[in-house]
Amino acid sequence: MTRRRDFTWMVGGAQGTGINLAAETFGKACLRAGLHVFGNIEYHSNIKGEHSYYRLRIGDREASSHLDRVDLLVALDRETVLGNPEKVPQTHSGHLHEVGEEGVYLYNRQDAFLKERDFVGGRGRVVGIPFLDILAEALEPFGKKDEAARFTIMFNLVGFGATVGITGFPLDVAEAVVREGFTGRKAHLADLNASALRVAARVAAEACPDFPHRLARGTRPKDRIFTRGVQSVAIGKLKAGCGFQTYYPITPATDESEYLEKHQAEYPITVVQCEDEISAFLMAAGAAHGGVRAATSTSGPGFSLMCEGMGWAAMTEAPGPVIFLYQRGGPATGLPTRHEQGDLRFVLHAAHGEFPRIVTAPGDPQETFEDSFYAFNYADRYQCPVIVLLDKYLASSYVTVPAFRQAGMDVDRGERFAGPNCEYRRYRFTEDGISPRSDPGQEGGIFWTSGDEHDEIGHIQEQAHNRTLMMKKRMGKLALAEGEIPADRAVALHGPRKAQATVLGWGSTKGPILDALEVLRAEGKEVNFVQVRLMSPFPARRIRELLQGAGTIVAVEQNYSAQLSRLVQEFACIEVARRVVKYDGRPFSEDEAAEGIRRALAGGPGTKVEVTSASA
Image (tube, rainbow, N blue to C red; front, side, top):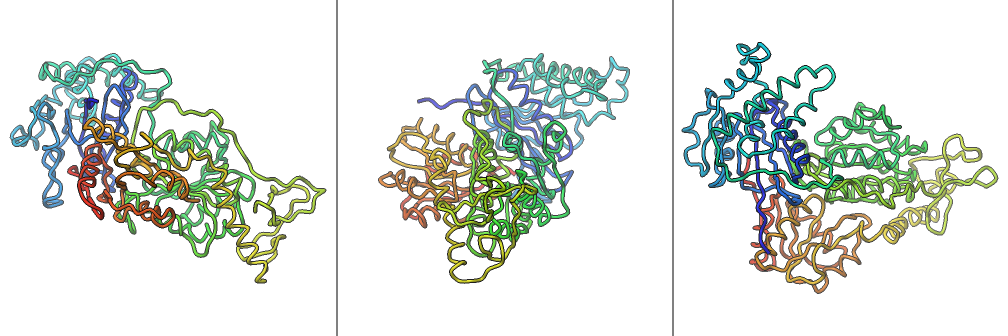
């Protein structure tokens, strides 16, 4: 088996200079040209000024993670190349050494702060082109040649155009995508931007005519889309019939709510920005009691504030709400715009006392779409809080994927009160522990509810026997859910049933692990992957079936303590003695995951491999 060769492009610059627009335009153009793309961005938590960079991995096959090697680096400032040791001594050295020997550094030779000498020590070839002169030539047909200095905001477009020229990317596709970005009141800018694209492509092609990594048209299936996690979550919510979404702005969750806000005129959903996360949760819980499918989206600090409300929702057996938790680096404010998987143990035990909760952790856009949809079915069916555990990497990574599979995705609103001729007890003891619920205004369906322990009617009740029965009623929902949730939504096996080594992982580590396994198999290593997707109720029996008798087991996680491996030991009684962890706020690359697994396999039991990114 031979290892594939993908092309990696990176653009770096100060935040606020449009690097994300350039990268996402390029990614969309690659989709149109029939190519596969995986893109991820790294940025600081301030609004403007600090260094950020966007990386695209482009090839003729699907990829689910990024590579460490860069083939073409578009440097829009000096810090992209050399870093800024005055800000962060000895830790941010820029991206100079990430470019391969056949790679190219593309820069603006008219930049007063970035000179060709700054690339000394790099392995690639340096190509400088005059960004300002390119803009002047592009503006000349519009009578604005002498105003080029006012249009430096278009340097990101010049960098994209130069990429098109150097790689031989289809210019017509690139221009069509650029023009699509200028409609309505901005339509008059389409010709100007297209002109800049064409001039930059021509000048860069002349400056670097023999770049070895050419991007020819591929054969794209018609049903492919270019999406990121926050969009797949939102689409899953809309398909599920979510009618009410609350949020308080917090990175990286806000993008999802803003995406829904843009589309709430087209779909029957109301999105409300609340005064804080406590209000956001309780408004959603009230809406759920009112019969509306409701959700709230947040990150770790916001979820911390929701915990008391979640206990109230569990005690009142509300049909939800569904909580979408986008993990980031913690504790406290931590790393607001960085990646981590540190909240797993937290969500399993958040809020005081014991009560059922369902927790899912999707690993890619398709699973994110599915889990977002089914979470509302779980909330209605089991009448308990449901948490969809996401993270910054899933939220912000753009990837080309097949259009979401939707077969068999039916809405299930759970047990409902039959009508006025029946005696209604909201918390009636039933064989399966699920009490039919009524909607406000439904005749005969009036009920009492309280955060205190209560009897079947809903009146506060502290009698010992009643407490015992109510606890068993509520907690029994976990066993019911474990038996009803399909196995393929709980645990997945990737690769052969038997292998010399098994990788254990969850959430967004799925992508780097799958790509790393392809690398390891090309080296002759027989490795499979057990992905845990349902965290509560924990599928211990199925995990034991897959891991008992397995070869060497290696956990790959983005937290300090390898939290999933400890859950496996706790619930499935299987020790995972080798662990690969990363907790520096940056996601695993394919290279890092592969090397970490190699080192863990080479070490003995108790080996803990800690991975740190070379990138800023």
